[in-house]
Length: 325
Image (tube, rainbow, N blue to C red; front, side, top):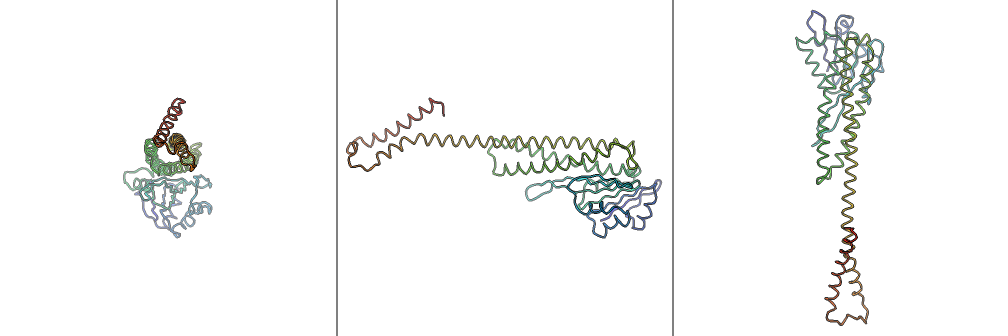
């Protein structure tokens, strides 16, 4: 699906432009064109070459998902790959997913390409459609800033969910832990690692935009991109804290599991030690010798039982005296 907007001062914003109109407005340097390709078909993606003449490498990056954010300067435009984050339902659980947003920013145009619907792009699209909006009047850099800002703002609800999950794990750890505790913990660690792997390079990508002004980003607008960088810097710090917290939970969980195992082994050892004297006595009296002193003795059976009880009690008293139990 292709959505397009063209803004020109003192004129009504045009929407859903034809290909011929797209070609003509590209030459109008005092206007601003935004083309959004959502889940583009092969024929729709051809616009990237036929209309905008983007570099084949950049077009290839749009068609194949990139694992890392990046920023390339092609002279006439900037090409940026960033990632949105969302929690998707998978059965009874939620899994972390990233959606790639490819963004071309020129002097008088912005082109966005994404294979799935993005809430951040939808929000900006709704802003542009309002008659009172002055977003596109501020230039291509501020339109790109708005797209990036809304995308980064949507990280925080995801982080809040992980904060709640980590708190729940900490509370559950010393209770009757479920069989899925370790599985959930390791899944959270994997998700947070993935989050750090995306946010870190994305933070560095935004930092490269904030260093110097250019023909694409005006000097007075650099502060807005620095604000996004600050948000990403804080988000990366939160992801680092989550990662460290999960490592601590994992270490404590293994220590606690070892402690519980040692307690079980301790109880089994005490039980085996206490029952060992009666087993020895029973094995002695169970031997089939013809001449046995207590064989004909009337008190033989009570004596053997009493000896078993006394030996077990003596073992318990001795272990208490040694402070083993």
